[in-house]
Image 1 (cartoon, rainbow, N blue to C red):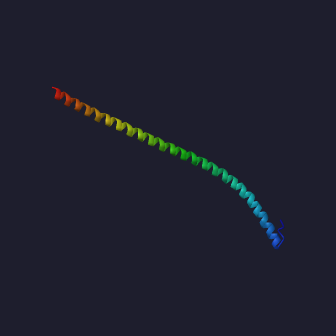
Image 2: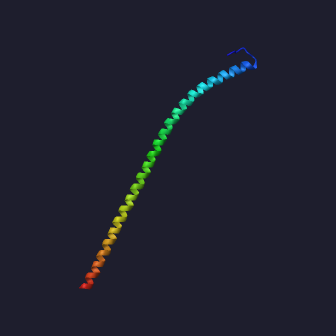
Image 3: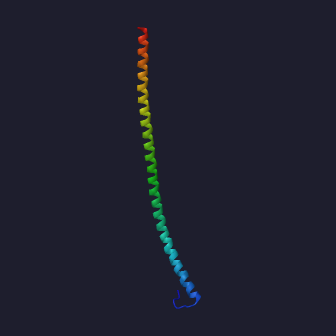
Length: 94
C-alpha cells in the first residue's frame, strides 16, 4: 500500500486492500455467524420437535380421556336400560 500516493491509483489500492481485509474479516465473521446460526437452528429444531411431541401427547391424552369417559357413560346407560327392560319383562311375566 502506498500511503503517500495522492492519485486515484493510490486510493484504489488503499480501498482494494481495505476491502480485502474487510472481506477476510467478513468471511471469518460470516463463518462464526454461520456456526452460531447453525447452532441456533439446531436448538430451534429441537425445541420445535419437543413442542410437536408435547402437542401429540396432549392430543393423545385428551383422546384417551374422551374415550374412557364415553365408555363409562355408555356402559352405565346400557346397564340402566338393561335393568329397566329386565324389570319390565319380569313384571309382565308375574
